[in-house]
Every structure is written in C-alpha cells, then in structure tokens.
Length: 127
Image (cartoon, helix red, strand yellow):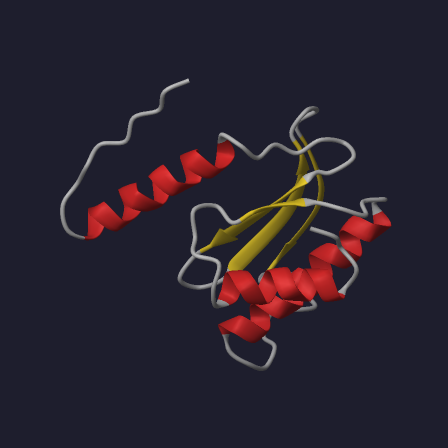
C-alpha cells in the first residue's frame, strides 16, 4: 500500500515528517498474540502507552499520565514517562505478556520515549 503525505511548510512540515516516519515504521511492525505492539503516544503535556494485539485488534494493557497513581506526582515529564513505562509493563505482565514489539510512533528514540522504554524493560518486558 502506498500512503502519501502532503509536503507542508513551517511547523506543519514537522507534523508531516512525523507522519512519514510513523508510516515507514508501521510497514514493518505488527503486533501478534505472542509479541504484541507497545505503542507510545507523546504529546506536549503527557504520554500514553498501550499494548495492542493487531491481529485481533484488542488493547491488552494501557497506561497514561492521567492514571490516578501517576497524576499530580513529583518530577518532570521524563520522570512521568518512567512511571507510565513501569505501569504499562506491570499491567502487561498481569495480562500474560512477556515480550513486545516497540512502536515509537514516529518520535525520536530519546528523552521521554527512551525513558518509558527503559522503565518498561526494567519492569520485566522484553523488547
């Protein structure tokens, strides 16, 4: 399948570049029952992670910066991402998931994305 993304100017260029990266990543990454996909969605305010089985189209586990255990906590956004990573790993382990495929969603693997991935690895998820 060919997906086209319009080239834009200014700030919109960053958005379209991210869309192109995400499409390029999703061509090769798919979650199965044995290895579901760990999807990271990053915004300016917070971060969300989901463990998805793409074959059935089900979300097996999820965590967000809006969860009661994380919300209003101390620290910066990277510390918040670490908490989300640990929480999604804990919930995925409870759902019987041992290994995942990491989908960074077109974002750079640095900062909050890397902090979430490292925390999930430390909590026992295999990438």
